[in-house]
Image (cartoon, rainbow over all chains, first blue to last red; front, side, top):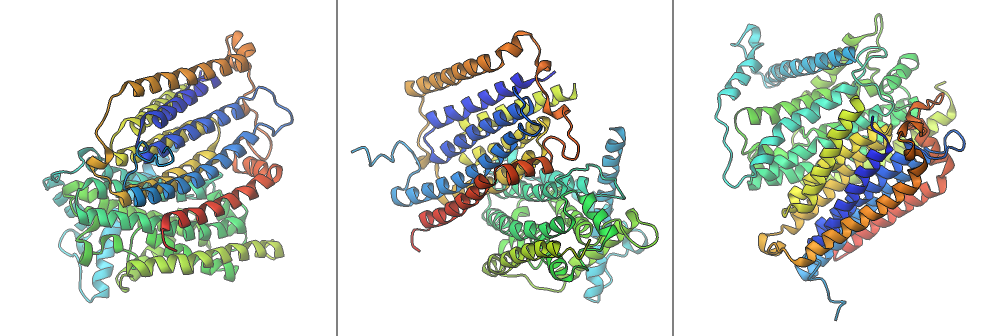
Length: 107
Length: 321
Length: 180
């Protein structure tokens, strides 16, 4: 029997994977992909709590979790579009997508 | 469960054999249009020509080009067939029966159609060949652009019928009117828009720049040999057959028809649409890449938005109730 | 039973493909693994009775977002020297351990307090399972139920999302185009 805990552990593991990607990778595109992984881990948590709510007030309250995921998907798509546009602009001026070398604000 | 599984198996077999028949039918049709005779030696009136083609392809050596990404190269062709076949699961076959009935059937069909270009891109990239890569880039750009008018055109029946269930759309058409015919203003233009976008999604003439043989040798299939090539080739035909079936479900009433409604009407309508698509293929020339994008973004997308608005307005009049 | 088997298939798929995204040096492999990961994730969404969200996930991520990534990767056409030499520094190890530790700690605390009373009794069955709460007319997770939640209960965020998408489209074009 698969309960909410299974889904939550999966979501936590996926979130950790995405966070590790953000921390250890230097390719900006991979970093963006890892952010997408983290956002999807959050979606999975939303849907889990939506199906297994702790408190039910009214008949259709838990479905709000699905609406939240809907918004997260839209925002994530917007984020990917803008993020990749920035990657392209940076690559054009610096000829690199290595986030370690994009450090002109540092000095 | 067992019924659904056997139905799924039956649908796969029917679609694949219909595709084999379509291969023969298209060659005959093309030959007639060019005052030739077409295949005639294998079986009666060349009917077993696809079988002979298949046997030939199976015998060929499979070559993996040097520098290719072996895993992706091998994985891409079967995936193209799987994704092309997946959409067939949602087609309502006769009243109330489909392999998978879902209240978001329209989205599922479009989603799997969009997913179908992932293996195409995989094939193009893994081939390590400039023609294949260019073809793949064109295919992806075209598929993503024409996905927009496709969705907009598909929204017209959804709005008119008030459901995203493909069987619900068909049932609404059976009790009211076929959307391709009435209401004539959002209906017929939406049908034409759907056909155009579907032609582009499945990379057929006049939208076949991804494999324009005069520029790109054979597009993504350039480096493929034997049955691997066969898979990609087959997937294109499956795509067209399933696309024609979905077009007839959404705009021509699917299984609905005079006398006895049922699967035969769906098959007949699919055949008609298929003939129409191949008529276009063997008549028109191909568009240039920039013309293709201009047509999509400057004409079809605004038209689609207008049609969505008009169909919402039609619903408000209440004339169809 | 079927749910358990499917869950483990999807979970292993998600984690394996996700690990490929993080670990592969070639961004093309990363992008394709991302698609695979989202595909399996859509499977778990179906298990959570979220059919609409699952197909939206496939349409938006596997269709649109993946194409964006692929196009950027092709546009940039990164060579091996631009990707840099692989390094194994102590900092990577520290980052990995601290991130995993922090996520684990937060997850442990969160799960512990939220489900403590329920899990103490050793059964998830005492929780409300909305998938079994079939409501008349609009089953849980169906198009109708989600549409109700989005278009009636939270219409302002929905409109704001459309505005956000418009801004993102304009912004992406302006930033990426260089010369307008």
